[in-house]
Image (cartoon, rainbow, N blue to C red; front, side):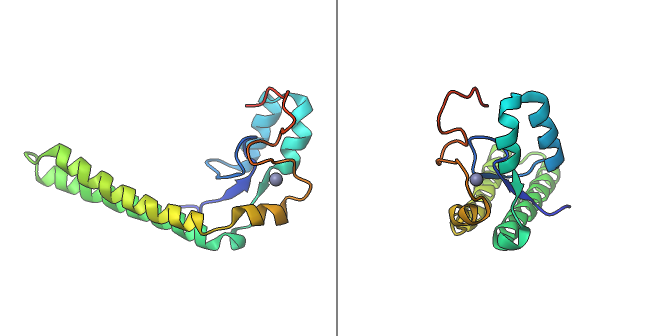
Length: 141
Ligand SMILES: [Zn+2]
């Protein structure tokens, strides 16, 4: 499993997000699907967040994935070994445990000052808390 990677401004209306594919694919997507007038700002602002600056957050994200997979394996085993078992109850138990693991991850996210990191790593950024196109008028999506 590759380690989770995060980037600033993958999309115009998100400060940062976990990458679900290579950043090169997002760059190609911008050039293929966004107005050429937006390329410069989008490509200037799109940047990987150095992993060493969010090490705790990456570890929390990985832990969530480990927990989630482990819970799914448990769920599978219980359903296979108890075919007559109340499936709804097993799924509810899984959901409660998964939500708990997710809340632990979200606590790590809240504890990470992404706004301060952004301010340091993304100088002269037009981000206003909602968009990289704060003046409006751009048909961005
Ligand atoms: Zn920025």
